[in-house]
Image (tube, rainbow, N blue to C red; front, side, top):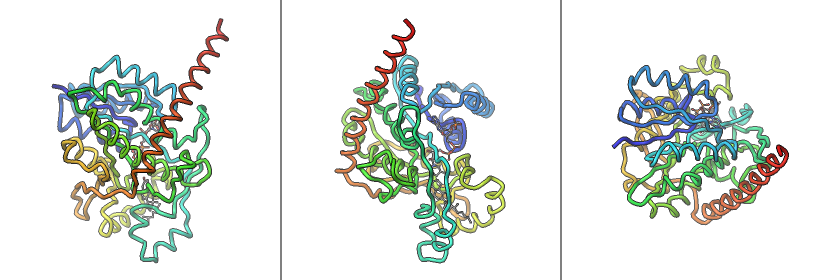
Length: 339
Ligand SMILES: NC(=O)C1=CN([C@@H]2O[C@H](COP(=O)(O)OP(=O)(O)OC[C@H]3O[C@@H](n4cnc5c(N)ncnc54)[C@H](OP(=O)(O)O)[C@@H]3O)[C@@H](O)[C@H]2O)C=CC1
Ligand SMILES: CC(C)CCC[C@@H](C)[C@H]1CC[C@H]2C3=C(CC[C@]12C)[C@@]1(C)CCC(=O)C[C@@H]1CC3
């Protein structure tokens, strides 16, 4: 039977590379590219169909950073498909990134250098802002929109007699120190990206606890450092090209420099081939590339605890209630104004 796979943020980078790789292993797939930018989504679909003639590739408009868009898209999914086999939660942003040059050089000559290259710990900050829903944009895009999507798609994801999988594209930059349960949206800090990725690790754990019995299994991956639009926002692409020989040199010491979207999608692709029972809910699956260019996937234990994961899960459910109420009031107001 054909498998239904939905990928958010599928129009570029790791998401698009994943789609290419999935179609290469299963040409019967019903693949849905869930994207914010439909022009780029059309281009991605055309590219996929060029290399996989006859493949079934659907497009879905989804802005994960907008509550209304998530609800509308989920409704559309429910009318189009009667099951979901894989939901890849891959869309993500890192707005206004800043590399702390001083901290970078200090780290470079410390014993922590390899860890710094693998995780960017202590050298990367971002400037976040409020979106039109009144939520912090990074939290809304990287975490909450995806959480709402799962909630809205529960009728398809949690069906008796059928296994569904969700896979979060997290990061090695997800750090406990950047996350505070009192400030889950990261309104007050300067590492919203790290915070949102750490939160997604915890939500995955909580989802497994609450939903495994209903046939829903969640996993988390890290693609390594990959050259995509996201990293071109940190340093310009010509600079990355210039330092590429250094990057390959660093790969000898840390195999987390996967560098290409194809390599970065390794763990996402690997999970597609695994049975959920064989997976560890407390592990993050890392895409790695050896100095010789061989790709492989390794699980590493996440630095998360059950108690905080549960509290976060409850807080997200509460925020969901608030946002639903806000939205229905907003819609009622608009309706009243039109009459
Ligand atoms: N590159 C790297 O080194 C690493 C990346 N990651 C993660 O990998 C994932 C993919 O990023 P990557 O491929 O690198 O970067 P890209 O910028 O190439 O891809 C990000 C994708 O997310 C989409 N997106 C962003 N915001 C939204 C939104 N509000 N609604 C719907 N889609 C949206 C983008 O679409 P649009 O065209 O509309 O902008 C794009 O398709 C992200 O979650 C990122 O955090 C994790 C670790 C390392
Ligand atoms: C000589 C060069 C290799 C210098 C590059 C320094 C930094 C710009 C990079 C070192 C570690 C990188 C890194 C990321 C971004 C670029 C670095 C900070 C990420 C944060 C990108 C997004 C992620 O999710 C994880 C990456 C970890 C490593």
